[in-house]
Image 1 (cartoon, helix red, strand yellow):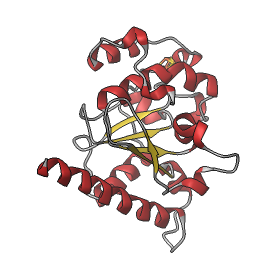
Image 2 (image 1 turned 180 degrees about the vertical axis):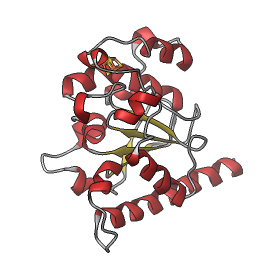
Image 3 (image 1 turned 90 degrees about the vertical axis):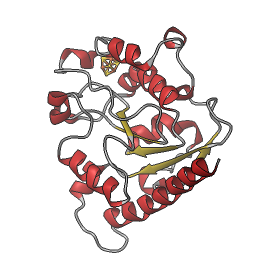
Image 4 (image 1 turned 60 degrees about the vertical axis):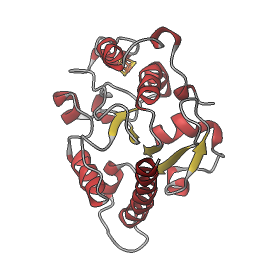
Length: 218
Ligand code: SF4
């Protein structure tokens, strides 16, 4: 099982607010030296759906909230198109909580250093659907389930099912394109990344509606 589905021992008995307070002071990797602030996450706890992105950019670093720059605005639109509103309907976090310089991709060592914070988030939020936006999130969470050719382009839109300790049902995990990739690929033509994301999000909407309906009927 991925380490993201176990509460780290030293955080096991703490409420998420206390964990967040610790994370805001974190100096576990070099990204602390160039950040303005730690961008922990945003959304309700617990929450049926969670999205994990890559890392904060300049706008996020300035505001302390994930996905608020151009890519974040596109993400908000994409989510709203399937009736998922921020910040009430989805919890959003990143693989690393501090901005990598020049918005570079976080190094594996930085993702590993930050893993306890993300694991604690997942275990408190207890999502039933987990969206992995982009390659770092895909590799971090599903790495041991991927083959050598399973790139984000190949596996986006595919449901992965994981057994997790916080519920009897399996967790539904879907990789999707990162919104910054969609900004660089503006076409909406059939088969384009934007079109594919629209198909993926309709799938997600269907699954989320199913979960919500089952809860009401329970
Ligand atoms: S990226 Fe994560 S591990 Fe590194 S300093 Fe920031 S909070 Fe700590």
